[in-house]
Length: 187
Image 1: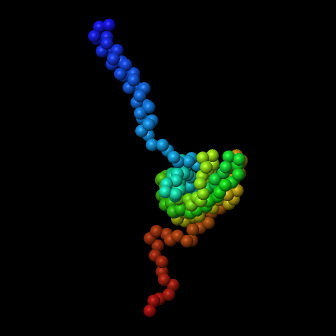
Image 2: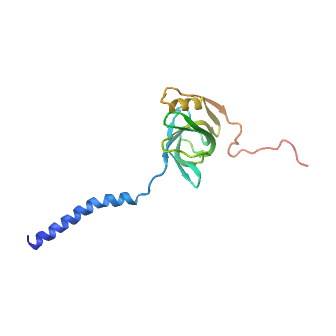
Image 3: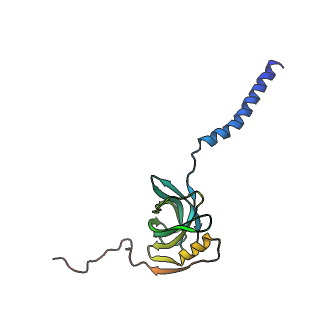
């Protein structure tokens, strides 16, 4: 072997080693995702949909990171969520409902970090299911009738049960730019 062939061989060997070692180094540098995936049960008649929900624990507090999509032509103000923890045998371990402020413009999507109050530890074998119980809009309130029963059936693999959605006028949240007039005159 002459000197030129040795240099080419060394360069080839260096490139070959470099090509196989970079993916290993890249994998080692990535932070480990310690979040738990959450299965979302979508009710198409509700104006809100949750995408890519993941639950993680930090400082003994749980956070549900997700994106919420508004499928309606009305501004959304809040959302009432239902979360179920089910063991591998299908037994319900816990059920949590809570309301979160979620201001969202019409026909838009935004990321949120919701904070369910989960008591106890989650096991690595648990499955977590999420559903929407109620959506509060500027003008309308949408309520999924039987959402808990439908989510429980969904967690057992029964995907044919869909809750009915009822709508109500939102008489509680003031409209933007609206002035509240006092009922009596101050002296």
